Length: 292
Image (cartoon, rainbow, N blue to C red; front, side, top):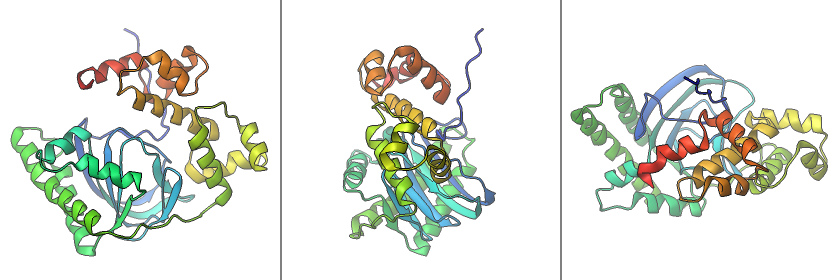
């Protein structure tokens, strides 16, 4: 039997505990080395308690304060920006697929439509009261403790905790009128990141970016890695592969997806896809078959 290749850690995040529908988490890490920008095909509701300073989403960077909620829709690049390990990093989060949110909407509330509209208007970050943040963290801690139990009763118990969590999220979104502006941490690296995000399907090299932004290749390579914990090459590769994953949720052919994502031929696309995800594009498409 052919051994399946293992994905390289480019920051791709999957749900833990073998789940594919939802995951709750609460934790404190005394010394954590962060792995960089990433994206995934589910929704993330992230609550920052303490320990981090900057959070990036797509082309913006936000200053983090205690008890802030960040809502990240599928396939939006995001991650903490830090050059040093995170000390006493406390956070909670809920991961949930679109199907899970549809189920929890009880055919009464279009949660996906609401979150999509907020993302379209660049509304990702919201402030919770200390009491709201603590309650939500406790709910996710309970879901986390129940994660290895999958009986119908356990699932019902999880839903009974996720629903008040989402109720708090909706209340905060509906009552929030302030859109927090982004901040500038490393202006040149941020501009380079924005340029890559807008042109990653086109031919891009370290030399091209060096000339365009007037930065030496060695400085660009070093500073970019410190900024988002990916090399320029790996970040471009990752963006192309994750864009391909996103496009595979539709019925477009894999060969068309290959070229639209910026690959010059199918063999390079196949190598990159396996390198990042651990499986081939056709195997990934088969896994999506029931959803198409």
